[in-house]
Length: 108
Length: 112
Image 1 (spheres, rainbow over the protein chains, first blue to last red):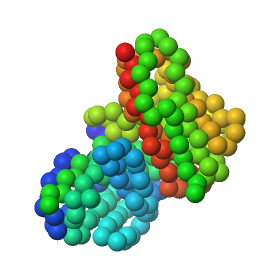
Image 2: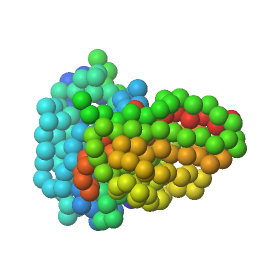
Image 3: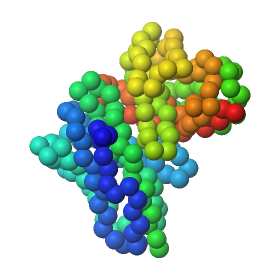
C-alpha cells in the first residue's frame, strides 16, 4: 500500500464546476504539499501546509492532521486548470513522498 | 530572476553508456534533489544533497551517482545506462529543510 494515496486518479469536469481532489497518508508528517504538473511536464508548487487551510485565487487546500487527510478544491473550474495534481508529504526524515497524482481534465 | 535549469531536455543513449544529466540553480539553495517519474510510480527520490560535499541516497539510487562541488550544481550520472532507466528526470531545490521545492523542467531520457 502506498504511503500517500490520492483519489480520484482521473477526473473530468465541466467548466465552472467545483472540484475536490483528496489525499490520504499513512506516515507521520511535518508538512504536506500540493503540486501541479501541466501537460508540458513542468511541476509547480501550489501549497505547503501543516495545519488548517490555505487559499490562493480559486484554489483552496485543507489538511486534517488527526485524520491524515488533505483536500484540494478548485472553485469555478476552467479548462486551463487541466493538469495532474500531485500530493506530497514531508515525512519525519525530511524527505518528500509523492502520491501518484490525479489527472484533471476540465471541458469547456 | 532565479531559476533552476536542466540539460539536456531530451537524450537518447544506448545501454551500457555513461550519461550525465545537468542541474543548475541560481536560487542559492542549499538543498538539491533528483527524482525520476514513471507511469504507475509517481515521483521517486534518487539522490539528494543538503550542501556542498554532501550527498545522500534516495529510494531508487542503484545505478546512479551525484556529486556536489558547488552550491549551484548537482549533476546526476548514470554509470552504465540500462533500459530500466528510461524515464523523465526532475531536479529540484529548496532553501531550508522541508521548505517548498522548486522543480526544473525535466529531462526525458530514452535508453535503447
